[in-house]
Length: 507
Image (cartoon, rainbow, N blue to C red; front, side, top):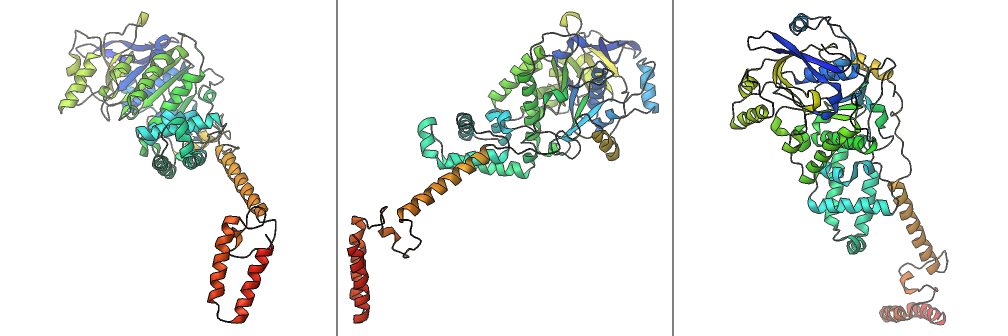
């Protein structure tokens, strides 16, 4: 049975379906990453919940996304239902104790949890380009925009900052093209239109300050349990690109901010990436390479990353090879691609002579999985057919009232509620534009001699001294003489000649 050095996952079964042994995840290998896969309805969320509970009880903070709302039940104490009690007996979980866990709810939209934000500058040009699905030419313009922001001291905090900078770049397109390469107004315009779509989809809620402090995801309670940060993602999943980009940003921030610690007795943080296929779907190679680098190196920061998805083929091979702790629920194999997925999943396990892995994957019942965790010296254990233990917390979602109560009592309550809008690119560029307009108005006023009186249609005749420009005088005089010739009465001629004469004397 698990102790303070491991997490009890379930019990493996012999070929005759009798109890074999306890299956555990060793905490010292918790930062070696993992994978939970299986078809819809096979028990992936429960496996995630069981692992999150185990890490929390071991003092390890957890971050996970709640796609359907079911995972929110981890905040409340479980109930003794017949099928749960029966499963506890089958896996020899004695005593089966119910428990609630310290949960902090987060929500990019600030509706079902504390608002969670990042700045445009923190996101960077690569992730912004991914989020906006920009073309190669448009991505080049985005990189130039971030370069200019750095050189000119323009803080990019929210969407209006980026919009203001792009408008400024469009005005300076010729100048910037000479310095950085082709900057076209159509490319800038396309980016601006994409930003407008993002804003309408609610992304404006995510960009700004106060930005999320990584330390708030790494809290522990006074009794030594790790906080479980649950991201409400049911609404966020309506914009899957924003969801994937946010989680990748968060993983990158952990990598950038946390110090090197090497291998610890237990991780400093465990990060569950549900619906992981969204991260790699249509992603450019440079982004996949970045994910691979982060996954490979972040373990030295004490962070374990666990991908949760339906199909192991969703994960690129180089990343899949780094996921040492595996929980494989049932897969269906009706189409050629599904059959390939089953073979791929089976080949990633250390074989067990007692059963055929590929066949077993298609026959697993709900709540049953093939499990292989890292053993001593980090070697993958032989795959075992395992009954997953029942969770100690509630199985299913919490009520809105329960959620509001937990949010109100949260250790970060009130810290992220109020948006802070300090001076940044938008305000600085607005100020520069106003100063330029004021300077132009002063120049025009000085050019008119400071007089309050003007003659409509004759202002262009005067130069900066208030006198006529020699080139323009000839044109003006010719026009006036033409009028003189067209005036029929002697009084009209006299008036116009008088005006002409006064202009001539003013030379």
